Figure 1 (cartoon, protein in one colour):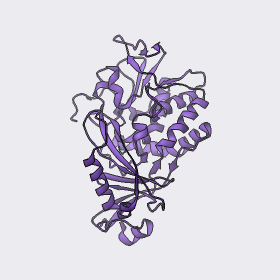
Figure 2: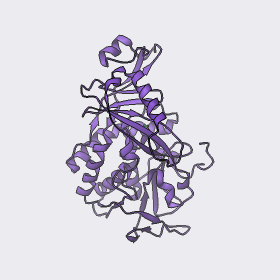
Figure 3: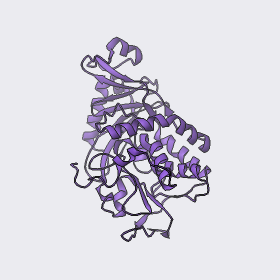
Figure 4: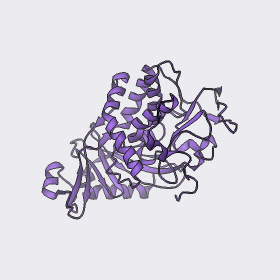
Length: 347
Ligand code: GLY
């Protein structure tokens, strides 16, 4: 359930690992209508400064898988997936021992704001253009023999104390041997207590046109990031708001994002605004994803990826496919189990 990057990646992996399996992805809107479309697509485990060492390791391991995973997606889907190992700069307003000096910075990325005296350079981090990844992944999944239902709303997920009994949809009741919940911020729709701990954290974003492609690396500042795309779009993100599923871009958020972005990269002042949008990160009380088994024996969980869903797609797909197929489990998976004290963690 869920046709975002996580659901499609797991579906593809299942088909690759066992082509006798019949795999159906059900999407309530269109593929990637949720956070997968709204995201900036940064592959940024270090830049994100993740405090939980288990999540930091998970993110690092997924980053290592990315080049091969992208190659598989592009080969099968016959579409470009927008991977760009562009490196990330974390600008600082004080000199840092392990950072680049301002002259070094000017050489690597000219036109930075005058308050920036140094920056941490993370050459191994980068991005994937999630709006290219989505169609590539969908095509790869279909080419691999997967089936997809789009625009089919899920009405109810009846279960007894042990098992999910089916998925009641607009098309009627759908039944399977195993189910995987990849509903992102909407996971609570399944009405299982563990999934009702997943909540939305809204992010607002803006895209500008940078025709001269002045920005060549991601700038990851405090509370703001700038992500240049290869096609000349320049993304500015993102707010982090706990306002439920409240839609819309607000004037204050747009103002704050642009002011911070212009401070970081002054040439941005002259660029044309192309678009603004918002999305809902699927967040858990402890900010860790929920991966693996569930209280129901035939339901698996792959949700709660919060800020790192695009980055975590390869490892989530590999692990979940392995679990469904009964393969040995990586010990790190235990850290993301539904059995941890989710409901009582501070949010
Ligand atoms: N991964 C960046 C964000 O969630 O805003």
